[in-house]
Figure 1 (cartoon, one colour):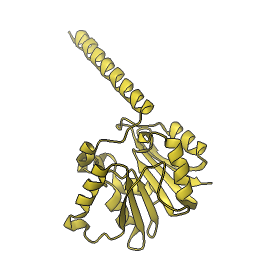
Figure 2 (cartoon, rainbow, N blue to C red):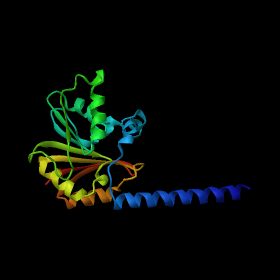
Figure 3 (spheres, rainbow, N blue to C red):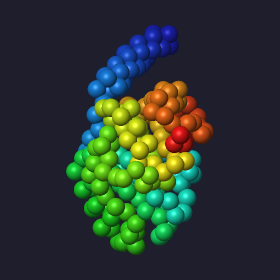
Figure 4 (cartoon, rainbow, N blue to C red):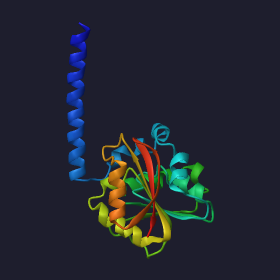
Length: 214
């Protein structure tokens, strides 16, 4: 009886795994932004437990006084924490392509707990054509975003343009995200765009890769 149950379970698990792999394969072939419907989850306590804010900001290298680009900010899951991390002398540009995502971020900033944050600028823009001058940012970070960009290489070259000399690019990936990319793939893509790998922190299914502008 137990053997039969194990066989049934293994068969179901194999089918589910196959469907998941096919789904991810299609996502990588045809990248699309995350749906605004997922905004509440992206900014939820559960997600913060899975991908702790303090850990990501530390791995990324965000410090006080920085001018930071939160690219693909979505509903602002990490935007407000970044604003607090850079302090009153720092500045955070929250950039996303989708109006609905930015509307969720604007609504979030209306809450009383965020009224003292005056260092966030919300900008609608395409990652492959950023409306910023060269050498603007100390640091650019993307959390579960890079593989959602249709032309990720072009976006990385554009990020390189707006980063200051020796500026930091931080890419965070989480395995549960359908657009997850392995460390090797992230490094290869960023190096192709002209970035130099600084370090990678984390483990297989949750890591932050940090690069500097060459």
